[in-house]
Length: 395
Image 1 (cartoon, rainbow, N blue to C red):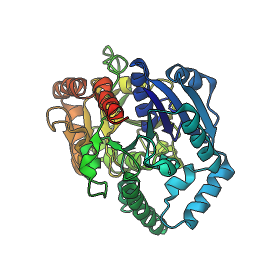
Image 2: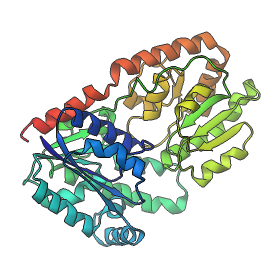
Image 3: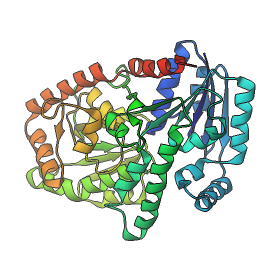
Image 4: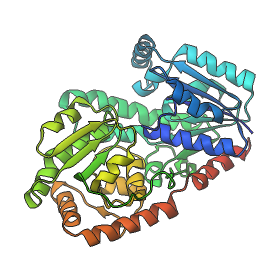
């Protein structure tokens, strides 16, 4: 099958959730013999090593369209001027990229078009009904923006509220342009405001178990770990919540408890956490597995955001005991108390973390059950096979 894939970011290195999802899906589809032509937008220069990692998966061609600063500004201005267009869409839309999409459709003549994320859907609006297309919502952006309202500064709230409304309307409108639709979890599917949202196919992420696996016992340099893209607002909020509100309560029972906040592009608020007692902010690490191996307990205290947390899959695969919130576990669907601990609010989260730090055998049992859970539930091949079946349907 000839597949045209549209991405808003180049899918390598695997430092963001959408890139991780796209890369593993591309790898599976290429291995099944499909001819893939990839068009990825990028607001930065793509390194040669990243191109080399992805090019073998794209026998039908690899195109990278660079979004310059002026183009992004123009897109945002146009979004403000066009009634109903979200800023999220405007930032990634450029007339030159539209011409490239149109040309690839004419020249490559795909059997199916796969579009990742609502921010890329605008490029396919003119082609609705003329070619078989699948939209991967992945996360529900409107819900993620709406959840930010509770913790955002007052001056940001009017703009966030407007963006959330525009995104919700756009997510529903774009539904009709595509033959098939996918999303990362049932929790997210319920948030799409379209009367036929139950038709959206849940395609979860997987975990590379051969890469993320338990390490031999070694000295632990940190008691707690949180990681992710530290420029992404839900992670910034979680890191600050953890360092400011949860860690001090843990340290009352475990003096000297240390927290590592690891991940790419830490925002200034995250960098400032390094001034807190017992907090280290590492920034980008060449191998995130070293952070998992150095920690005793992994915690993802998510209060905003949507989707399935890859960080939890990775930590559980590396057999770390995990603590998270109901918001994150509603997508993960682990069994609280057996495969991970689930709590809400700083005192309850601190209690859960303290209990694991105080009881190593219980922490080990939880970690082993967590590893088994993700191994049995989250498999890239099984998940992407569902996507492949959609492509084959009426392609």
